[in-house]
Image 1 (cartoon, helix red, strand yellow):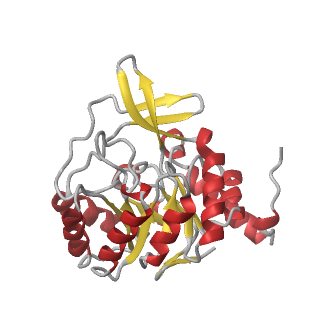
Image 2 (cartoon, helix red, strand yellow):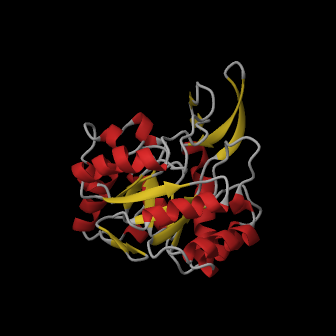
Image 3 (cartoon, helix red, strand yellow):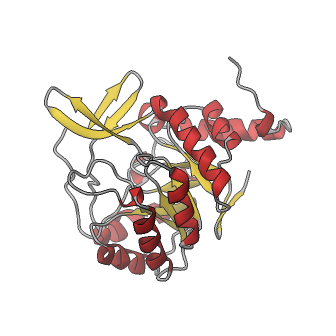
Length: 288
């Protein structure tokens, strides 16, 4: 069950995706946090962000639209109140997702996190619902430049989260590998328009994007040697196994956490049961 992501050894290959599990604390009474491979926090910026106007989450028959806009408490309060408390209640690896408007902001966050006992950093270069902001990971050149700079400032396991809104995901994944990244995670949500009834720009996620995500994960896995963490519409163990078949080293559950907070635990337990039966997940066939 254990898997290696850079220097980080996870007890199992199933984690929760950033932005779908709060700071981890919100789920402490609903989920046995110690069973999760890793908790990826919501994205933290240097200063607090109010995010986009509410409502910001819209349930669909085929998925979900979110327009959070990176709402968070900012680095200082996160370290003092959120991360400190999370460390007290779980021994599970904590991966901190970080974002910023400038390279300077990101570097300040990274250098502060260097002194924290966390498992890894996930660079969120892919958020689609910051209106007026360009998605850095849509450019291989800009991604390489930024990841290279950050790589020089930290020895923490470095993961970069990629956007699906690109012409060729393999070029972006390769730029991360060349820049010294330890792993890439993909995919984030797709930018969409929604009437609620007022006009809302947001990110589409859930079951409707799974097969697009699978294709991108497969292509990335064929291109880079660093681990790929797959996500996008994983609702049950069968979905997770499809990502492993595509080459993912680990998977992250996102949208499903809103419908059933136990989804991650159920997937871990089912994979454990399959492994105990000596079933090769690469040959596992979904029961249709």
